[in-house]
Length: 184
Image 1: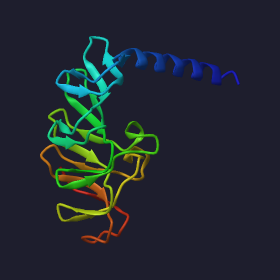
Image 2: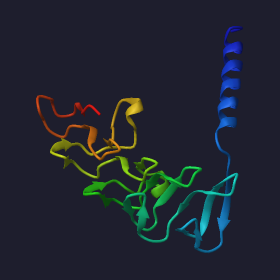
Image 3: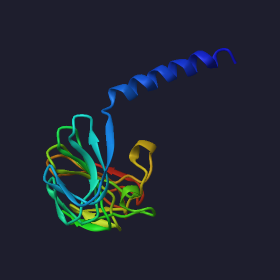
């Protein structure tokens, strides 16, 4: 039991150091729809970085976010430099020719993520159904990322080339359900 205490203490210090290195954000309640840094944020909660830049809010209309178009009611998240990070769409919607998942059991803030590179190009989406992506039969995704080894989304290189997906059918010598990966 004595050995567990130093390990827990070390973990506590590491977690505290990590938390201090993350940007702090402040939640504010918007009493009406408000344009912030070019985004029309809906009334309700919006989060801001300590420097005052918008971190996240729900948008009131269909709009461009990076190089994609997102539906009204989507939850956007920006990096501290104002570049798009990801969006949780209000409902399933087309994204660059794909149908990506949106919504969630508790609303868009609890649903699948469409991630973007800092350039605004599509990085990842969870498909709303099995689809052929650049000639590859890709399976619809879930909420759990590949870091846990299951339900990966469809990932793209910044140049737009498909990087990986779980196969919806046998393809090119691989079996349905296996992870298809292409070199960068």
